[in-house]
Amino acid sequence: MSHIQLTIRLLRETDGRWIADVSELPGVTVYGTTPQEATLKAKALALRVIAEEIEHGELQPDCDSLHFSIAA
Image (cartoon, rainbow, N blue to C red; front, side, top):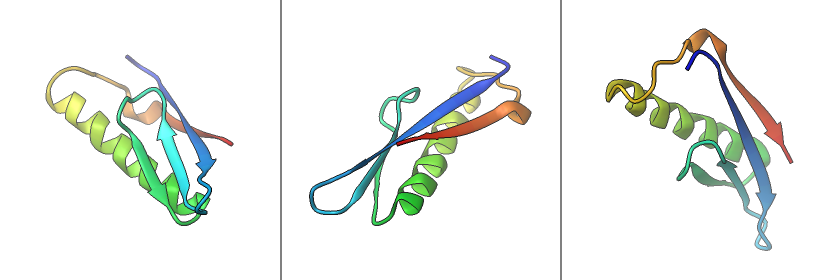
């Protein structure tokens, strides 16, 4: 895989917390008190998941082409 495009989806809970998930990476779902915090946490977790996949030989990306987009 030479190009990775990830979409962070933001949703607001009724209690005011924000949920951010990355649909391309199952299990990458986090909470934050603001959209910015949730986005930052989602990016960090997504990068950890990608790093694990690279370590285990499951993914061989060109890391120069790693991009995130934000979808509300």
